[in-house]
Image (tube, rainbow, N blue to C red; front, side, top):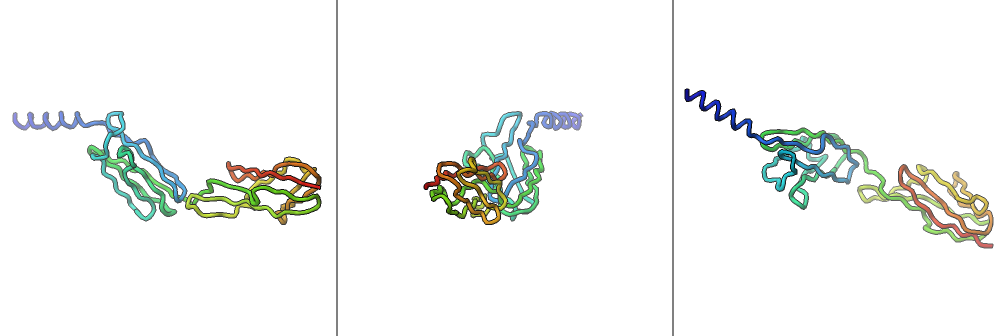
Amino acid sequence: MRRLGFCLFVLAGCLDNPSVDVDTQALDMPQGTKSDVTVSVDGAPVDSLFSVVWTIDDPSIVSVTPEYDGKRLRVDAANPGETVVHVNSHGQTFDIPVRVGQPAITYIWIEPSTVTTQVGSQVHVKATGLDTMYRLQDVTLDSYWAVRDENIANLDMAGMMLRAMGEGRTTLHANFGNLATITDVTILK
């Protein structure tokens, strides 16, 4: 009889275990970025990570720390590669596969930032990008270029020379993936 009572006590304790979940099943991140993971208990985000434990298969690829609010985990992508972050709370473990890729370009601009020149002259232009590791990248040849009014200026893609064709104002556009930038072009007599 005591065994039956003990089994019922243990079973009741198991039935009272909270339901734990994480909001992230997998991460695919560029190097130099971060992502937050929220742990929920019984459907509500935890107020404190006190009851949450985490480990990383390869800590050279990512690091995991509490976010500043103390309520979420922050995953920082340090180096390209693949690893798994294991998050455990209340006896339940969640494996989050993480893939860290090469740095991603987050911002682009055209150099020079504005063009003012005379009809018949040429100006060398290029596109520069800033990546997630805060490094400058030349994205000139990987960008799509357009001049709004080719009667005023056109672009020789072979030498990346903007040629002043006629007097007026136009714009030079560069697109790199989903990033875009514009520079003003003024051609004088």
